[in-house]
Image (tube, rainbow over the protein chains, first blue to last red):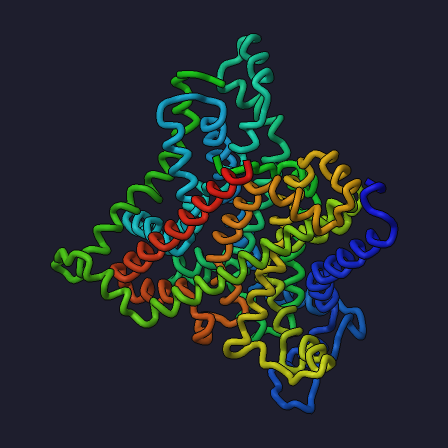
Length: 287
Length: 284
């Protein structure tokens, strides 16, 4: 390693990556810092936005003048409307992840550790589905949801996400790489396919399952298209992710606390599953 | 590997049932919608919905913008993530902090980050302070065509990390002696990157551009965050058009637009796939 990179140039690499790391982290950090401004301070600050007079600048604000928990007090105690949307978001994320936990690994197992007629055809179908953007897949989803009467209920957002082709692909690629000896040893001991799945494959796949949970959570926590189309007549069921745009205008004095509160679960997921994401994402190629 | 086990269907059943019910069967059912006129008679009209759609100004505008934005975003993420992964690889086994901070945004809800974006891209905001410091006039980032800049940056900020991780795991699998030999021959970092790393990871590079492209078609999200449901013409995406038609209960137009788009997407990915096949053949 050292041999390849003589002295000074590694410093250059570090400098570039250092700047990059700052750019990546600052939005998150500043959002947290702003959430500790008092409601009056942040409201006054947000009011200076949208001024097209070339002689006026917005103040460059990094941290609150006085540390205050006022915004949190407002959203957690005085006005619970943001909290209600937060609960909606959590409901969607939990229900989607539970469904995926049942459907996705089993499908990946069948497509990677079994040889049967139609395997390639099914996998090809899943790849095709993965390539289709939401604009296309929303049509079949809507048609079925409308037929069985689930439009404008929470299930319209939840159920179609259970069959997410990308996570089937992700886990299948990982399972393909497992050594055959692993399962053969279990078979010699008399384990059937179900027992192999539950006691051999699943524990070994811990990293990729963790990665899939984290990535899928990130998706669920940032839902926009699905609620906006499937729940167009039930705005009260919207998750918080859809509402920030509106809140930035109408509720400027508390919106940063809402944002910080919304980031917090994502931050925990990130810290908890970081190692899994790094070791679980081993997509070699489209086979 | 299990061969001819009946229990495979037990594992396939829930997923297959769902995929058939929510995706495959209605997908073909939808073709019927796109070929009828949508009145109470539901008469068969052939492909006239499609020919009409290709003359619809709003559809074409949405399609153009979606394709343009994705053609900017996907290659941008692709190129940056490849270089960042190469740089990170030089610091191995250290540099974990840099790698982790690049990954962080991928897990963050960009919906909550939009506040920060609105603040710094304001007419009197930090970005414009930098712009004037460099000697240019202030730019109205949140209006008109300029709005594409914050939208694209929000997308890149969020999606860069995942692509970096995929690239990094592929680059780490490139055998180390290749680099040592190249260093002895006097090849620098850039020569090594383009001469060794890139040819060795063509399948991964192909995968990343596809994944990012799929992601970039969802740029409606970023557009909605920054400009709301009724955006400027320059960022009016296909999803806006479809939501509009959907809310008017015009299923004929929704299905026709979706399937027209599907054909384009498959054509694009087909070309990309053939290019990759060619490239791999030439390299081996």
